[in-house]
Amino acid sequence: MSLAVVILAAGKGTRMRSSLPKVLHPLAGRPMLEHVLDAARALSPQRICVVHGHGGEQVRERLDGNDIHWVEQAEQLGTGHAVGQALPVIEESRVLVLYGDVPLTRPETLKAFVELVDENRIALMTLEMDDPSGYGRIVRDADGKVQRNVEQKDATAEELAIREINTGILALPRSLLAEALPRLSSANAQGEYYLTDVIAMAAEAGMTIETARPDHEWEVDGINDRVQLARLERIWQRHQAETLMRQGVTLLDPARVDIRGTLECASDVTLDVNVILEGQVRIDSGVRIGPNTLLRNVRIGANTRVEANSVLEDAVVGEDCVVGPFARLRPGTELAESARVGNFVETKNTYVGPGSKLNHLTYAGDTRIGRDVNVGAGTITCNYDGVNKSATELEDGVFIGSNSSLVAPVHVGKGATVGAGSVITRDVAAGELGVARGRQRNISGWKRPENKD
Ligand code: UD1
Ligand code: CA
Picture (cartoon, rainbow, N blue to C red):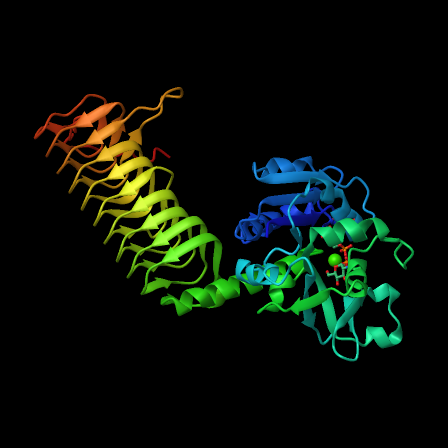
């Protein structure tokens, strides 16, 4: 049976107190709605509809994918009305309803869930809660068959005592929606068209009503304000941390690592405290990441050490390297095996060959460095003249003395040396020594000035 996923996201999100639409607030570094879209896509549905509210342009701009049908619900008249707005564009036989502010439902949970549905069966995601207040309650008959859902505000005292709640997530045949939505009434405590009233209609029509519960409560947690968002962020980070530890990664404190993206970690990787991993990160075995480091879209080869307080972005680091402490690898940096980039070194669009070292206080931009090159403390590549960027090339075995400026474009040949304190504006050929600094004069018998008073 074909499947359409409808994601309701028309709510104003007033309690976020934000100019950013609620569903664009990030969880684990990505908009809430993007998590929901990912889960939806994992089901390979024939169609995904997002119902957005007035002013949904920001949401569309941020998340547009060719696979999304955007449907506007100008006025929020209730969840039933919201799904009704999407119905005309849905041709699929089954419909799954998700929420833009319920970001963490796992694809596995949803896959099993939609399988429960056919022409005569609907599925509700429900949960037993110690404190069910605020939620719709699931009313069952004496045989335990679901009869209907009653919203908190419409419930009798007896119904309020029911602990099984409606999470809101449901899946049903399109034919039921087509039949039931036009019959919804807003004669209830909130004056809304409740999607949940479809449940009673299905029961009356003799359909089977399946219920399923998620493995984790957080899979159905909805976000209304920043307090709930922060709480769910912690729950999710904890879950990711535990998954990593089970895969063989050591976390010195699982409460102090944040994964905002996808992390692939081989075994025996150690992450110290306050490591932040963003985007796509891949770490090979035996790697140690020091405290207070940020890794964004990086690959790190086996047995490399990234020392404390380093920031790596869009970079590839080979095996057996040492990076940091206090190193900054900017986009386009590639370190070959056994390279070293030490404290207060910044690299950008730079390749560092095997065994080469930039150990202290250096900037290397648009630079290609061969193998076993030593770049002395304080070396700067002057790669930018205010308009254009130019390249620097240091061939194998080059030695750059401390505090040198390499004015690009410039080429230093194999095995060449640059004397400390040089400003190198012309190429240095293989094996040569390039020195470009004032000659030292020593004046003997020099008398220091004396105090005349
Ligand atoms: C809904 C359910 C309730 C369930 C609860 C779980 C209904 C009638 N009730 O109640 O049984 O326990 O969720 O959290 O469905 N939305 C729109 N357009 C609308 C109205 C809502 O897009 O016109 C979206 C909101 O943005 C939100 C979601 O639907 O993401 C739920 O709406 P909300 O009004 O919060 O429903 P609840 O009262 O929480
Ligand atoms: Ca709600």
